[in-house]
Length: 256
Length: 280
Image (tube, rainbow over all chains, first blue to last red; front, side):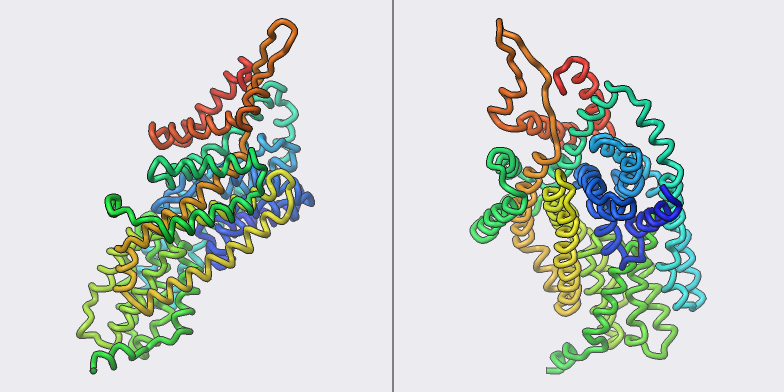
């Protein structure tokens, strides 16, 4: 990968990290270019193969579909999974399930960076305290912008180095993998996204009968071969009916 | 009558509120930290209206910002409506310093940030975003078509910022009581219930499209070779995926196994499955 390509990917990677500011905060960042689905398209554009980029992006994104941060605590780091995982998988000619396995490993690793930056950022809060105390209001209010420094350092450089130096290394690794290991990674990678979906199920299912909706969607797709958009519309009809005619659960009202 | 006159007074215009909202949306997590979470962003938001609230009064301006340096954490995209309420309270405080105690804004923020995080985490992070992503992935997973990511981007930008502004501005306008009503009434449960139906159905479809579990088991009865996978597919396509999905859910939700341990379990299953040809 060329210097420029690695540089661009690392820059996008920083912009797509959670807490990043340049693309109007998390709106254009974390929730837009930060999604592996979108990252796959952008990385594909930079590396000249949009189709493969998007296919890898879809695979990695399905693993992290339900990965949310509760109270600011991340279970897995989607940023490195996308911005290191997708480029390395693309340049080393990996299969979809190999890309997914790589993404999962990087996701687990990236949580370290996530927590590190969050600890280091305490510095900026104390700086703001001091500046306000001294009456330097303009300066204090600018901290949320220049306080991005640590995030930038710990997102840009790991991604840049991994993308710039990684492909040769990765190609060596890919070439030395025996057939049986690839087969196992294939089985494993096809199973992995189930974790993402299980997290969603855990968050959404409050009453057991709601599983029927999950099975309903599964069957519409597998048996009736309906497109996802059509399935969305059908489910909206059911949701509307539930909202308009469903009874508010008196007994389960305040279970918090 | 005098109460009415008070209620209609305003220091902030809609434009000021919009500017505050844009700043909030811009930096809400920019210096996310272990100690006070989103406090710097609240300070930045208040900073944008300080000259309108306390013109030429550096001491009050400073107090305003210092007041908001305290811990704040909620779901920021939509739960940011709390900041809209805080804005309304600060406006009242600026107009009637004697009537509005300084503790009020802090009490309100503390009371609302938990419920708002709960409601909007489940609506936004766990329902809306996965649905939008699932649509994009559903379109592009097999073909790599550029339509999937573009549809996701279009839907996200059509829905999320507009909803955020709607909530923020209305929270500012109706203030505290209206929001409390929504949080307390059954509407919250009804919305979540309806959203769940869409979420679960779409997730079911995308599970089917992105995952694969197959068995390599074959038996020979006399002359004929029996392919177990073909038989299972005849009963219900991808039935093993469905089974494995419920197994994963059971581990995660019922047995409370951590995500990393589940990955290990899956790895072991894959290795054993491969060498016994149970999985292929």
